[in-house]
Image 1 (cartoon, chains in turn green, blue):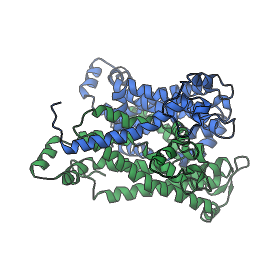
Image 2 (cartoon, rainbow over the protein chains, first blue to last red):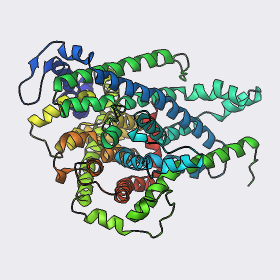
Image 3 (cartoon, rainbow over the protein chains, first blue to last red):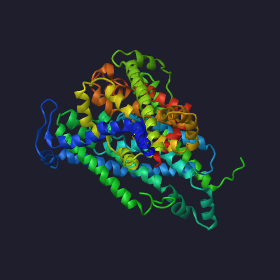
Length: 297
Length: 279
């Protein structure tokens, strides 16, 4: 085969990216479009999908559980994401001080993050046991009465939020690496200019790590919109729907109630929500995100 | 110690000691519960150190006919193994394409690839489910393994960053030696990427090992269950409810391979977390 230089370049480019391109079309593009189509149908897996127009969307906006699941997810996201990010940044900064046993602290703080997924849910279900749980035991040191946690609709979501703080190790490692990448010369210059700790952080350190902060923030929000494991393993969305996360509601609608059209409408709204949130964060980030070598999009 | 001990540092140190203890205590509680007898496990206040170490809890976990922990483990290993192979091979191939060739539409393709990182799986899982059920792949490992062979956006991005650091002279020398394009990838670029590939392998392993939603959708018979779905079944009412000490044994056994990977390849492991977190 004789190809021109550009022809060769194109040919090999597409040969090498072919696996991803096929995967993208089959496992991403097609499902996105198909779920848009299904969202306009009534579909129970067994019979053929029946076109019903906007009926699913209309029904969604009258469904109390749908609103509940949005509220649960938004509340969880708004509390868990900023606090987890803040905690991981604070601990990264503490460990980044010239203190003894730095390596030990880094490993010890990261270690809990390895207990993730279902293992994490099992452990915390046990820790929050109302009768003999470890958490109530610790609270008793401070004279706080034992709580029902996952049996109490006011506390169940808070228990999951507390659990989420425990997984801050990954973020902490990322911030730690970012902090170590801040040039010492900049910090030295700030010190010589007589900048205090807070002003150094505000004007030098944070701007330098802000692109990473932004990326962490976006990914944490997207991840938090998709919380499923704790609801599936521990609470089944209860008590009284207080932990009925959006994706859990979507999953139950599709695979328990076999309302695939309805669930597809939810899937599309999730996609749109992620797009909008990402867009808003990117737009408003110009104010605090600093990119070395000019602005990036 | 030659370092100057300042007040700030001492406070930082103290805060870290307290917080580390708080972070680690659930792990200690997990291990200690796993080694307690059923009666000791129900004590309140809980004991920190078991009165007698019940190592046989672990053997019971594996020999219990209802839990079938050995089978869960085996299934998880099989799926993770093929997921890792698939992800590493396909992601390396695609990343190489993105890094080395300036094909038409490269920027658009790259943008599309990056944006799939943000694509929530639940948003696309219903059509995927219908697709796999049409292929009659239900209750098999195929829906969990096959997509891995089409690359993962994160890993492609990570490997592309690595391939970008390889010097052009490498390929020039390959050309002089008459290497084909594919051989340059396989015999020149790949052997130099060991550390980056290891990072990708670790991450796809951990991801596959912890995945719950995929197995929940595609696996229905208990013989096919992976660890996450099997462990979820252990506390649900579907099966006889397993006692907490065995559940903690299960959690420890499920976490062990991840901890082992961390211990063996701490540098790669940390690097992977950091690289996937920085764009």
